[in-house]
Length: 138
Image 1: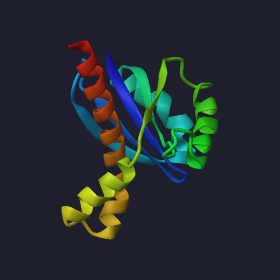
Image 2: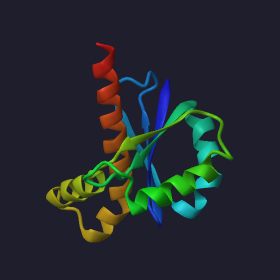
Image 3: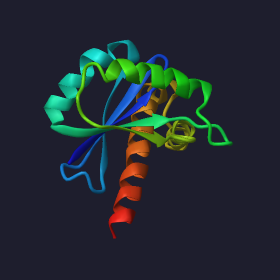
């Protein structure tokens, strides 16, 4: 079961996919402008034979959905209108910050970091989901 992950932001959305079996490897795909998400998502689902979508959801420290999370939930309602596969929300706590720190330590310029940080955040979200899913199988 191949899985697609989205890190939806106000301006950009990072995209990652799992290995074909959906077991243990998240791979970066690309970053798109969020305004193009509804057009691009069906194409990506067909291209990669996706059977499930994991969407990063930012939670506050008390476990409630953050303000950004509420924006994402509203966007997902539109997404449900263009795809007909399961959608799972996954805690993305600190994934964007982790991605940014990783890229800084890797020595990427601010301009280069901006172009890949959303995709790396999607990879981190998906890898976290896959690790938890695999742990529950054992």
